Amino acid sequence: MASSPFLTFNFRVSIRVADGDEIGAAEFSECDGLELTIEPKTIREGGNNFQPIHLMGPVSYGQLSLKRGMSEDASIWDWMEETIAAGGYGRRAEARVELLSTDRTEGEGDDNLPPPVTAFRLTGCLPTKVKCPSLSAKDGGIAIEELQIAYETLRRLPEGE
Image 1 (cartoon, one colour):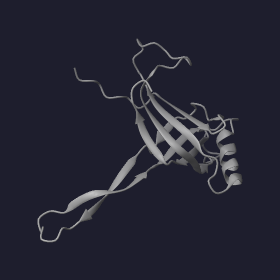
Image 2: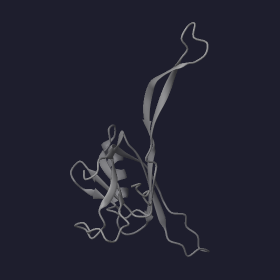
Image 3: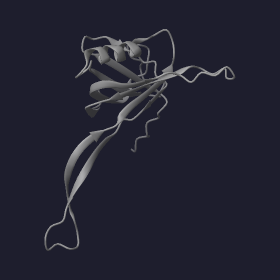
Image 4: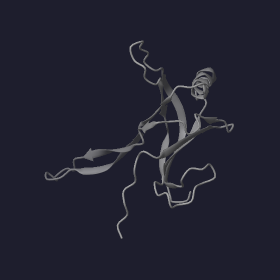
């Protein structure tokens, strides 16, 4: 039986720094930038005029971009300030992005959220940008702030991990 593709609207993001503090606990409305790229090295073999040989080159990762409605919670600002104060290596964190089940018949987890259908672990996370919301006296919209994170590794976790 073929499985249905996952839906993108039901997700949870958790970010934990080394001492266990959680940052912006599951408050994000948008998540983008989960990507891994291997850049191939092309080699032209002498005498082989018909095809190049491709070897594995460097691996690069995207920048995680998270957006949320601005509130009293200043944890992402605190993390950025602590990283700047630490200098050099900064204050690193580990992040986890989970796509949650949309099947209402499945049991709910400890935090009243549906169980994850898949998850990603990001290590060596370093905040690289915090963007304030655009302000306008003409608009009655929600103030959205953005956090961008550089990460060192990205791994899709096996089911249940």
